[in-house]
Image 1 (tube, rainbow, N blue to C red):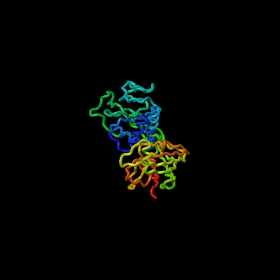
Image 2 (cartoon, rainbow, N blue to C red; image 1 turned 30 degrees about the horizontal axis):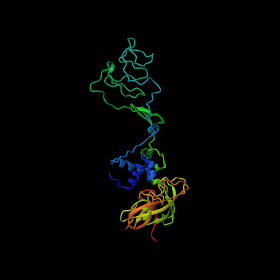
Image 3 (cartoon, helix red, strand yellow; image 1 turned 180 degrees about the vertical axis):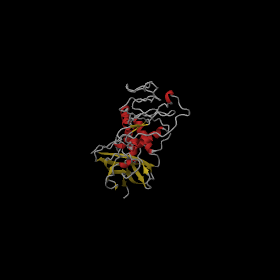
Image 4 (cartoon, rainbow, N blue to C red; image 1 turned 90 degrees about the horizontal axis):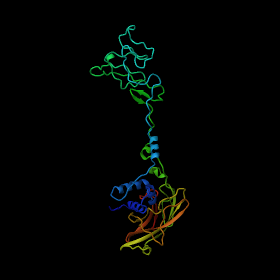
Length: 357
């Protein structure tokens, strides 16, 4: 597969040099947003390149985060009074119902009674052919319908009918049980940002539309001007265009390179000063481009000159770093400006120096 996108080529070149690296470190090395780098790497991995994009995590930490995001459902409470929940049974004549107190009077010759003796505190069973009423406080689910003392089911099943739904306890602070369904307070809804992106861990997690506003000041200038810029993480930078050597074929040849017929070399010298507290971790000239008269950008060439040292990765707070950037373009191409940007696509943070008088 041929790689034609310059951004993909920079990612793959840096990855080939490092071999194995975290996505955010690779993105910082090439001056790219970590999310964009991850997207490009996954797409390149699926295109057949010998590239594996993986992820590593702390299993215990992830389980703790999931447990906090999805709390366990509340358990069904046991009633505070009465015997344990159990299917309601119709007592047999002559014997007390299960769970009845010892003082219950059984049915016998001296106590004639036409029906079964109910247990203390419970109403007598309904007429034959209908299920007994649900026990107060119980779920009522799973009660086998009975038909008098014999316990036979009526033909055709249990007749349907309206059922009374007990009201929730006063205050509604705790769960209550209605027909076997536990009801109660629901967990608070998840933050849509957290549920979509996960918990924030680094400044690069912040949304792109919430970045700090660009620094005040001019965005254009001439050779020798210093312009205020801003990095991807809000770094406060000052970029100065010191020199443009066009052509610079002799410097290109002195470094051991050879130009093809009809090509010329251009060398641009810039300095970047970090005036803020946040370190700038990208190549200062990663997206330093030449602009032709028709507005077409010319990206830098992947070469460095011995007599003109290139930029190094990173500019610490309070530090000024300089370097030279090399370009190879057709001899007939007219260059009118130099543009610096913190990302591949120019935006309101881009700086431009005109080369025309």
